[in-house]
Length: 63
Image 1 (cartoon, one colour):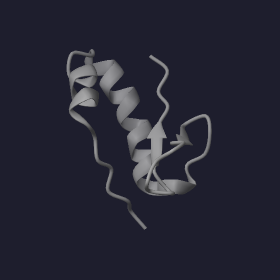
Image 2: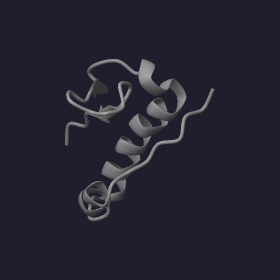
Image 3: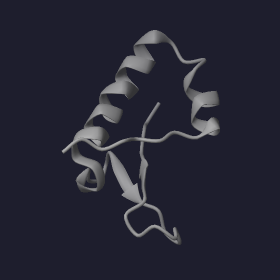
């Protein structure tokens, strides 16, 4: 099952100025998130404490 990943304006502002190589690297992690959804485990993602949505995840990217 494929999941739809939504990104924030804050993410876009951070992502767009990155180099093409960095964008490709991050894109691979986003593809993992689309494939696995809420099952994508640490270190790639983690739950968001205090979210109204119990399965809300954040992508953890080290760059």
